[in-house]
Structure formats: structure tokens, C-alpha cells
Image (cartoon, rainbow, N blue to C red; front, side, top):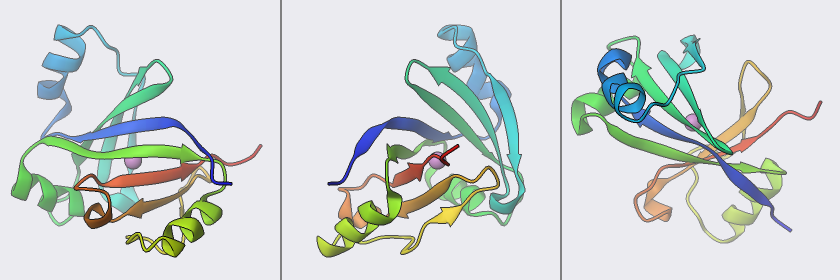
Length: 137
Ligand code: CO
């Protein structure tokens, strides 16, 4: 049985953190917990914890990155929603069996050992959906 545990994060693409923070920090009173560089994706991420989940502000750090191109094309805004799952390989297999189009056929592994994969927005009614499996400790 496939198990979807929670919304791990919601990612929002921004031009720069300071201007985005006039809303998230100054108007809503939320706090950035940490900022992290992800060199392999050419982005910088500001994490804003919110209950069981977090808002992630994603900013391109290079002019040829995928996120930079996305920003040029669509402007700032919602980028993807991330669902945390128990067994990402099982979830991907189950989705494949249901003819759901995947961006990543196999999970990728982040520096922190997180397994992740994206589902194509063509199969999700226009929402880019990321799947995460936390490393088991
Ligand atoms: Co994400």
C-alpha cells in the first residue's frame, strides 16, 4: 500500500529573498530558519517552517539554471508542492502502473540522503509535484 505522509514543503520561486520577505516575514511574521545553497541545482533556498510543513523560497544563483529560465518565463510564484512518502520506489512503481507521467523515472538522491523525484504536471492537472522520502536513521 502506498503511503503519503504529509506535505513536506511548498516551493515558491522568487527573484530575491529580501523582497519576498517583505511579505512572508514583515507582513505575516514568519521567520526564515536557514538559507541553503544547492549548487547542483544552481539555487539558494530559504526555509520558513510552518506547522507540519514549510514554505521554501527558491532563488536562482546562475543565469542558465532551470529555475532562472522558469522565472524568466512565468515570473515569481508557486513552483511545486512536495509530498513526503514512505517508500518512494513503491510510489513511483504504482504511479507508473497507473500511467502517470514522471519527470524522474528513478529517485534522485540529495546531498543529505533524501530520495526525491518529480511527477510531470501533465499528469497532475498542472501542478508540479515532488515526492520525498526521508533517509532512515
Ligand atoms: Co522541493
